[in-house]
Every structure is written in C-alpha cells, then in structure tokens.
Length: 122
Ligand code: THU
Image 1 (cartoon, protein in one colour):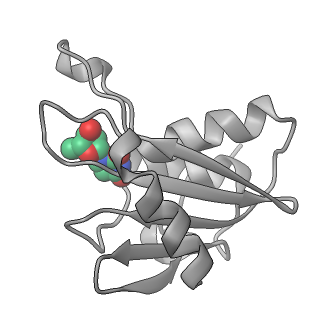
Image 2 (cartoon, rainbow, N blue to C red; image 1 turned 180 degrees about the vertical axis):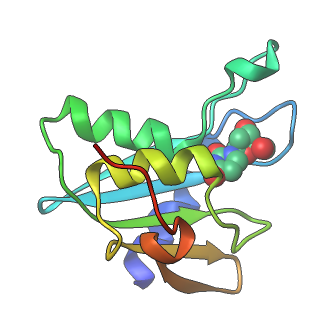
Image 3 (tube, rainbow, N blue to C red; image 1 turned 180 degrees about the horizontal axis):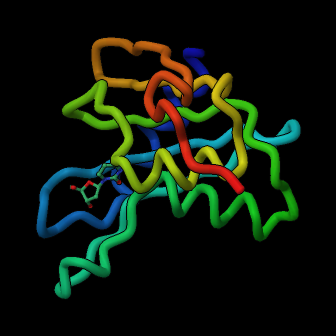
C-alpha cells in the first residue's frame, strides 16, 4: 500500500484544479496493470472531469475492462468519490470492488457496494 500511496502523492501536482483548488489523483488497478487519472478542470466549470473517470478512460484505452481495485487520493482526504464516478466505476467493477480512500495521514477501505447501494446495471 505504501508504494501506491507514493505513486498517488507523486502525481498530485499533475492535477489541473485552478478553480476549486481541490486536486485529486485516482489509480485504477485492472487486470494486473495500474492506470492513473487526475482531475482536469475548465473555465466552463461543468466541463471539469474527475480524476476517477480519467483513470477509467486510460484503462479502457489500454484495452482493460475489469477494475480490481480503486485508489483515490486527496490532500483533504480521505474523500469518497462523487456519485457520478461511483456509477462509472461500477460499470467496470462490481459491488465487491475495493475502493481505497487516501488522505495524507492514512486511508480507509470501502467496497463499491457500500458506496453505491443498488447501483444501476443493465
Ligand atoms: N473531484 C474528483 O476528481 N473526484 C471526485 O470524486 C470528487 C471531485 C474533483 C472535481 C473537481 O475538479 C474538484 O474535485 C472539486 O469538486
């Protein structure tokens, strides 16, 4: 876990969050590989993209589609993922998928099912 925490912290400065001042780094473990994402904000605020969804996009581009574990780091954390990201994570994960919420002092582990009960699936 310490190695992952180091990777998350090392990428914090890559987040583009000039409007909120709230940088977030996400790391998705999928099929033996890891994919990073940071939040990318925009002057047109609703166009801002969460770190988790950017990590999922990198995973899909690499040809992976099964999320095994998710890590989310915020200097103000541990923070839970937003509702929209929970739904996006469920698309490629399951209610049993671990979501590790990291902050500077430590982390807590939840499952996606705990974070998104009765998640919608087709
Ligand atoms: N943010 C994320 O990147 N992930 C979340 O799950 C929560 C919110 C970002 C979006 C925005 O750039 C900033 O945090 C403040 O909402």
